[in-house]
Image (tube, rainbow, N blue to C red; front, side):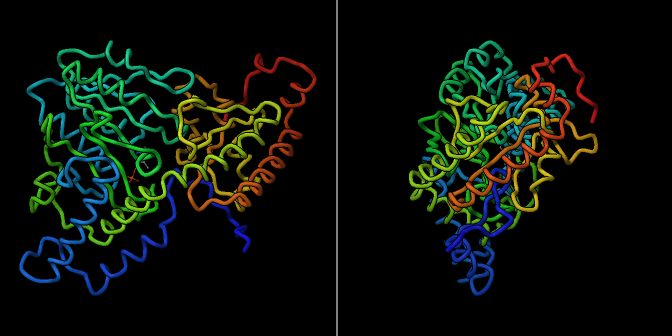
Length: 408
Ligand SMILES: *Cc1c(COP(=O)(O)O)cnc(C)c1O
């Protein structure tokens, strides 16, 4: 059967489809097993609590946690990032008020840190190199006796680059601080072991790993050291007092099932996606003036970010976005069409940042879909370059770097 049902979805870093096996596991918890997991005095409540316990174990197993109790359910990674950063800043305020993070974090971390700055917390935003990488030495140099937390993402959501988390965690602990990571683009896709990696807190979410939207978790270490975060939501004292609110039982069941399947299928999925990513990149990098963004030697195969010089990403996308769903290097949500802050942090000029496209894959992406995407995008690039005076100049050997790029 052909998998070429248009539009083709290559935006899996934004969200993945729910695996049919996950959906099947969730359905009873909307219908006959609809109890509240906090209802301790009847079978409906017990069934819900049992299901949540199982999910907590499935998720703890996926990340190598020592106990299911270390999993605190939230509404997603954004909430988990907020809870980890604000919760640590508050809980450890007497010990210090300095947090270290990076300029290429997800907005859920950057904006939370900016909010903390307004409240008097001192935040260092480390710069990345031209490949998007942070070094442990940078972290060591930024640490002070006041540093309470270092928060550095495991895998970047625009580039797919993987930071040297183990080494950074080691340096962090030597400096006496806690290490947190946003693991959203890593968990379920590459092996993650919170003990082996030295992670004290980790945010992640179901909808980037074939689970439903609106449910995520914060891993909070309980031993060596015992980490505590101040609740950001007051109420019934659920989740060991760290996150009040009736648990999203069907969502949590789906999250747990998704975690179990990711553990089972991780190697197979990784091999499948690697093959597709390599094929797509080989086809595009064969073209003139196409560049790969991010460190090619330190990344997951799930994301490929390419700059197609002499075309503008948003315009390029208009040529095929009825057929292929991807993301561009322009933050098209903002009225000003600002180029991506992540690509800018790598030192890309506005022109190259605007000409970037992020392709992201899943276990459901097929080779047929990738072949189709290659064809469509290649044709669009060629068509747009034919209309571009800069491309014409480049072809004639004129140095176009001296020419001002039109304001957007
Ligand atoms: C998607 C994403 C988030 C936000 O997750 P939600 O569950 O949608 O709130 C946070 N961090 C990273 C790296 C992401 O990719």
